[in-house]
Length: 475
Image (cartoon, rainbow, N blue to C red; front, top):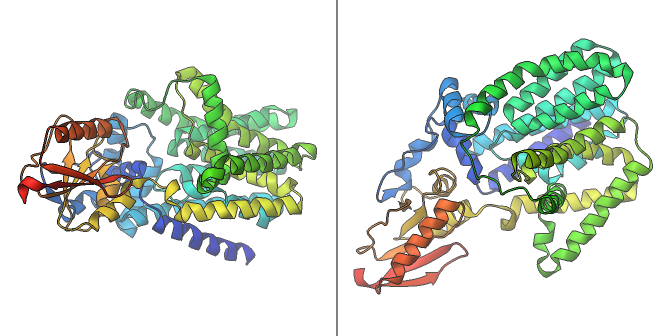
């Protein structure tokens, strides 16, 4: 009964954040891929937001999703197949897509309760530390594959653990299948599978469970390889080159953000002091784990350490820096279990309080949100204007979230690379200056160069990312 009550509260919290939080760049890829237009055919010239709603609402079959991923993306298909089914049942809205991640996050919490009870870890603290963790909650509300991969990883981890405890090889095979499916939802989820296999190798009595676990992984890893080989050249330049010291700094920053969110951002001038205090709190919690390791600490430590170490290894091998909060979020449930088992009550209370403050920011603080949706609502409050919006690298991540938040009557024209719209007879214009990607920055530079040679236009900043342009010659 207590678990049911907790999961209901978790559903309300995550559901509210999913509803209130602004739409994001990467989520648009999920929406359009499952809507049947992986790269939506936006109209040329001026159009209304209402005239393109159908681009958000179509349906793609499994075959089309797999094809579009292989030719133009860097992800495996399992999550998108699940999302296609979900949107067919629950509707095409952005919020409905996010609710699928909420459902997977709730499943992950149920697995944590199951594991914590069997591992003699206090269940309620483990659940609370996980739910209020910024990285877990963030990936549990966005329309991407992280929550599905997290759920499957936790399920696989728990099944292999129980296989060893109960001496049942069939559970190890089931655990391997779940871990493999996690990697088929997100490639980088494989780090947890690596941690589980390493744990099985570290003691003679666990070796017998290595083979069935590995056998469960193999079919999914073969499928991953088939997709990855086709995709390997589609996102060159996505990450910066690997520089060891800079990578370590970014890793520390993003791991702290995955644990505590944007708390230093909210502190303004006192941000460095807040970051330092959070660092002390985190190190004190880690010290408690190593001073008196809890029972079954080893597999949890390996699982918590695998994602950051794996990202560093990937960066070194491929000469890039794929370090982001969403990838480090794979560590967070295992760290929460360790904290729940090792922290004394006063420190546990402090950790929960700090995490609760971070979660409030996740739901409400614009500093932790991407600006497209927020700026769209502000642009729509300026009636009678034409909104000039960057097309972006491929017409997905910038216009998708922005247009989704516009009223149907809003008039839009996309700034495409190398093309300058005819503005001579447009009296009122709102220029969206979000520099979300390289193509957006180039398009905005093109507009600014055009305006420098025009005497008719007066520029007036409206918000952080909106500029009002008054064309005196058109009035």
